[in-house]
Image (cartoon, rainbow, N blue to C red):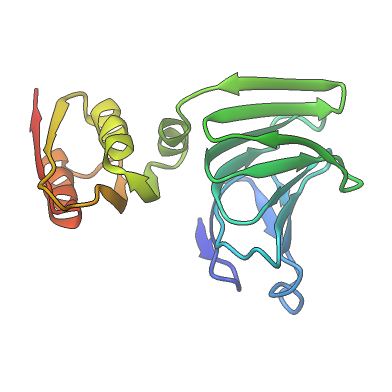
Length: 194
């Protein structure tokens, strides 16, 4: 299920999961409680951090794209960061560690943390079948598309064009249509070969 929160942030909630929040206080206290798994695309607000609370930890952000999974266990929470930055906190709200894009943290307690490096956009795409990549270098978008569609993409960047774009697609979209959309949005020559 996809929903837009009162502050404009997007959240994709996996089946069997639940998300709760105080709608009256949400604009000033951006806090949600998650049981299960969800992917968040949080609207940036430096004055009002966004907090995802779980049974064993909190995730604190200003604006970013990340996944939180509490399914299958009461003891460990898995968080994967695609873009931006997040802070892992204990349930008392004390900072435990900062997470960089491309990292997956499996948190059990302050003394039981596992950090893995991975392709976060691919991970989120596999989980939800859809991905939005905001303000990204064209090379990052091309890497994701090459992994999804299995071909080689060539980009011709005209002089004076800045290859930073916001781009989104669904896993089931036709490859030719996705490449054409990227060509139009970026203003660059984009072709794909087998």
